[in-house]
Length: 405
View 1: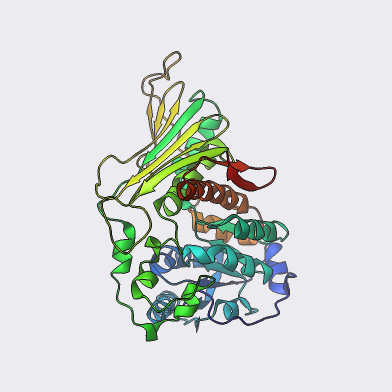
View 2 (view 1 turned 30 degrees about the horizontal axis):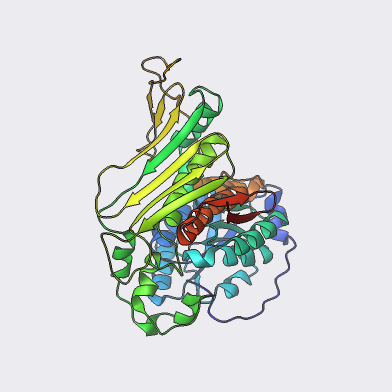
């Protein structure tokens, strides 16, 4: 999904009558549109929102994608669930221009996120945007500043932070129960790179808009594998240290309260799979924060060795199973260990999508606001800059800039 033709639409950024009523807690129905109808756009986000449509009184009024079959599938999912068929569009700006669309879900390839979110907010729409928010600092800063100057409700798609286990761990660690957390690690491996299964999907040029897919990238002849397997090409996604690490690093920020890494070193290359894809199949990145060190590693070619742990002076928090089950506490501190049998108290929290939908009415900040997108993007961009330049990279938070150091 992406921009097809650059048209200019005038959409007043001021609150519409519907939005004003909504902000006051009325029962008006909220019109929602989906931009990007791929696997995650349909199966996770569209179906996830439809699950709460009656509770939050929303209505999907438009679906938008350049890939014809995906667009039609999304429209059919809405029709099957609600009995009403939404409008289908190719051009995302046309959807943003619709006055009865109050909020949009953006689930497009990585290289389109920041620009589309910026355009959505400028059009006066609330938004849920997939991660990572940005691939480059310039587009990131434009997007963050645009959202912050607005009154729009924006949720980043880092859904792991909204799980009860994550919320409980955040409260537990920030209360100091673990002592000082001094290192956090994740090893996330798999037999094959995830972009392989996407790249195997059949696609003919007549069923899509290749120029629109490229968006702001250099034009080239149609390449079905680049279109379908875009996760594996650096023009459209940097690799696992950007696309997968974003889940982990956002959880680090959420649980510890940290905002930005200070500096980073990264190594990576393709050792197991040497093919047309140009994102590394193995990567190792280390980020330094004020009070702790973070290590992330992925190796495609093995499914063994996966874990996620927070190391504290009183024990270790094992978050390897982050699918919603409570994290495990290991009392192995050297001086003042946690008592045997220590566990994190259970907490209740709304699913990530429901949290956003509720905030559309309350106008409160959701669990993953634009600041979360800023923080996770800085971390993944810093990691990628270190990989590409082969140097230790530093983030200057005051100047909002990355440099060697």
